[in-house]
Image (cartoon, rainbow, N blue to C red):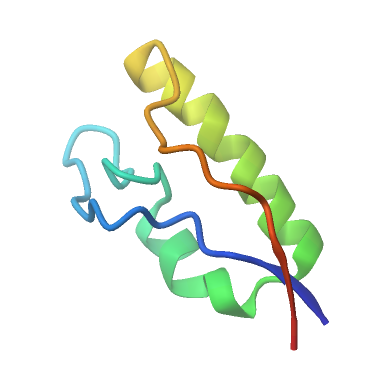
Length: 72
């Protein structure tokens, strides 16, 4: 089963305003479900994270991370 690496960058703070983590822009639910998501679900979430970063900050503040596939 293919999986993506977690988008976590160890800046873990959930904004009361947006409901997103200030580091990776995931919601609490996305954070807790990450390891159980399918590869396709993970790809959809990654796309949302970039959109959220641009919407909330004017740019994506996520540290660049190469997309590596992990095989279990």
